[in-house]
Image (cartoon, rainbow, N blue to C red; front, side):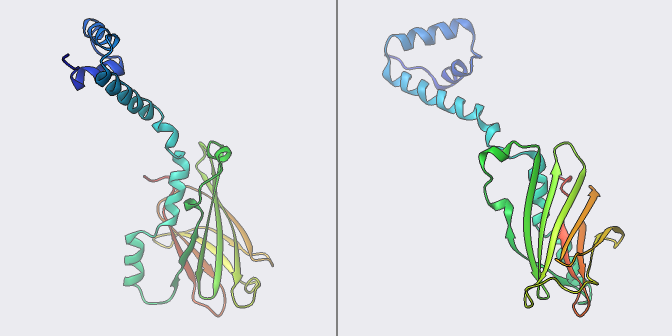
Length: 210
């Protein structure tokens, strides 16, 4: 018995082959050709997996937010070209690498956490953005690693562009907490300024950019 060619069988599974060819393939399969029936089963599985592919894709706004986590090459070049008057923070935790519970993956509110360290400070940041919104918010807390408390009350947090144009600023509470909201812009810097230490800088990629 002559077996079915692969391309007509694939077209049959996809439902795009011409009716006369489809009738011939169906008759061949109904005749009991086990090899072609196995091939049909395999291609049906491929079609089913392809149809489910979109469900494996994370929400676009969450993907954009994840780009906050990565220091761009431009940011690294900026630090190498400038005198050491500030300290680039080290990323020690990225919540995007932790899988979300199934019930949260399709929610309208996405929250993402990262933690940085530098100059004896721990900077805990949580970013959020609602679907279809261009407003990003940061809720953070700054702690002194050696004193198990917040740094001095004169500590401020600044959000600025690569050209040092100030976008937003916030003082910290006695618990070291702060909150900033801003419209999506180009690449940004988050700076923590406190007395007795170099300013700590965290480069943020814009979640709106691809």
